[in-house]
Every structure is written in C-alpha cells, then in structure tokens.
Image 1 (cartoon, rainbow, N blue to C red):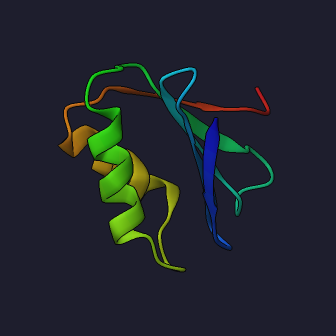
Image 2: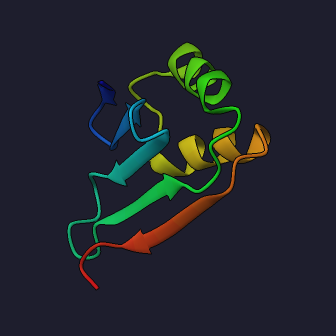
Length: 81
C-alpha cells in the first residue's frame, strides 16, 4: 500500500510494503532531485509528522529534515544522473 502527498513543489510517498518514504522535487527539471529513507524504524512516526505539517509550501528539503529529526537516514540523488 502507498500513501501520496503532492503540491506544486514536491511529491512524497509512504511505501508501507517496502517500509520506505520516497520524495521528489517537482521544481528542478534539469536534475530531478529525489530522496528515499534508508532506515526502517520510526517511519510511521515520521509519516505522521509529515502529514501534520503538510502545506502547499512544503519543499523536499523540509521532508528530509523531518525524517532526520526522527533519526531516519536518507539518501539524496539526482535522477537525471
């Protein structure tokens, strides 16, 4: 099962079956930056925090900061590479 949030700046998915949060920036089409979580513990709490703080102004960096605040490591890369 997958839950998705999206605004004009970014999109984020909580992939419960894979135990992963995946996010991508929708504003930088030259690089298509994205991230995913490397840790599995605490994902549910991080997703709850993301949904509570979600607004039309949230950006990918904000999502990564929420994950890091919950002690969840993330991997960041540009999908164009």
